[in-house]
Amino acid sequence: MSSTVTIQESRLNEPASLLKAREESAQRLMMVYAITGLFFMLLPGTFLGVWNLISISGRHGTIAASWIQAHGHAQIFGWIGTFILGIGFYSIPKMTTRAVQPAVLAWTAWLLWTSGVLLRWAAGFYHLYWRVSFPLSASLELCAFLIFLGSVRSHRAVDSNKPKERKPVWMIAVLVGTAGFGMALLMNLMTALYVSVRNIGPEFPASSEGRFLTLVAYAFIVPTVWGFSARWLPVFLGLKAVNERVLRYALLLSITGVVLAEAGLSHVAAWVIALAAVAAVSAFHLVGPPERTAKITGVHPLFPAFVRIAYFWLLLAASLGICAAYLDRANGWVGASRHALTVGFVATMVFAIGQRVLPAFAGMRVLYSPKLMLTCLLLLNIGCSLRVSSEILAYENYWSPAWRILPWSAVCELIAVTVFAVNLLLTFKQLPAHQMKPAIAIRG
Image (tube, rainbow, N blue to C red):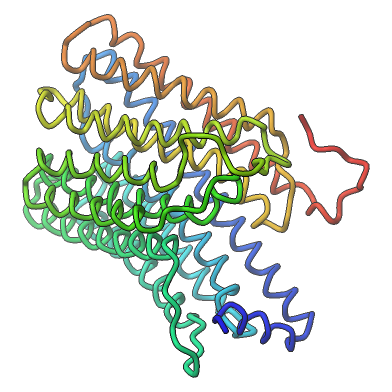
C-alpha cells in the first residue's frame, strides 16, 4: 500500500471541519504567494526591465549593471521563486497525515522572502547602504527557503512499516530543482558577502554573475519546470506517459552542464545543456499527435500549442547558448539565450500552466477570461521574438536599426504580463466555482 493511500485513509477519520479549515488556509496562503509573485513580476521585474531596455536602446548598451541585476533578481526570485514556494506550501498539507499545518511557518517564510527580495531590488536600484543590504537580503531569502525545506521534511508522509516505493520522475525533478534552488540562494549569499567585503558592488562581477545564472537556470528553474511538466502535461495535453528513463538522463545532463559551467568549461557545458533540452522534449512526447483529447475546459483551446511553443523556446535558448560560446562579443548572443529561456520558455510555461492550475489551487475557481489568456500569451511571444532577434543584431553590431526594435519588444512583454496579472487577480476575486450560479458561463 502506498503512502498516498495511507494519507487518504487517515483523512477519512478526520473531522470534516478540520479538513475544510486546512484546505481554506492553504488556499489563502497560495493566493497571497501568487499575488506577491505577480507584484514582483509586474513592478520591480517587468517595469524596471522596460525602463532598462529603453535606456539601453537610447544609449546603445550603456546602463548600470546593478539595475539589470535588480530586474533579473525580481523576476527570477521575486516572481518564479515566490510562485514555487507558494505551490510548495500549498501542497504540504496534501502530503501529510497531520491534521494541522503550522501555517505560522509559511507566513514567516513569506515575510522573510518578500522582505529579502524587496531589499535586494532596492539595493540594486537605489544603492542605499548596499554593503549591508546585499548580504542581509540574501540571508533573509535563504532563511525563508530553509523554513520551507524544514516544513517539507517534517511533513513527509512515510509509512515505516511498508517498503519505500521508487519515486516517480516528476518528484525527482522537483527535488533536483529544490536542491538547485537552495544552492543558488547559498551562492547568492556568498557572492553578496564577497562584493560587500571587497566593496566592488553594488552588483555581482560579470564572471560570478554568469556562473550564478547558469546554476539558477539549469539546476533550479529548468528541472523544476520539467518536474511540473512530467506531473501535469500527460493529463492536460493528452500525451503519452513520460519516458522516465529519458527524463532522468535529461536531468543528469542538465546538472552535468551546470557543473562544467561552474568549472569554467563553458563551451562543453553549452553542448551538454543542449543535449539535456533535446532529451527532455523527447521524454515528454511533445512532437507528434497526442493519445487523448487535451483537457482545455476553462482555458483557451490553444493552451496545448503554447506549451509546445514554450519547449521550442527551450531548444532555441540552448542553441543560442552554443552560439554564444563561440560568437559572443558584446553579450548579444548571451542575452538572447537567457531571454529565450527566461521569457520564451519559463514565462510562457507559467502563463500557460499557471492559468490552468492556479485558479484550481485558489479554491477551485474558474479562470476569469480565456481570451485574456490568449492575449497575454500572444503578446509575450511576439515581444520575446522581437527581443531575441533584435538583441543579437543590435548588441553585436550586426544591424544598428535593431536598437529601435528593442523598446517595442519590452512594451509587448509589459502589456503581456499586465494582462496575465489582471486575469489572475480577477480570477482570485471571483467566488469558487461551486458557489457560482450554474447559469454563469465561462467568459470567452
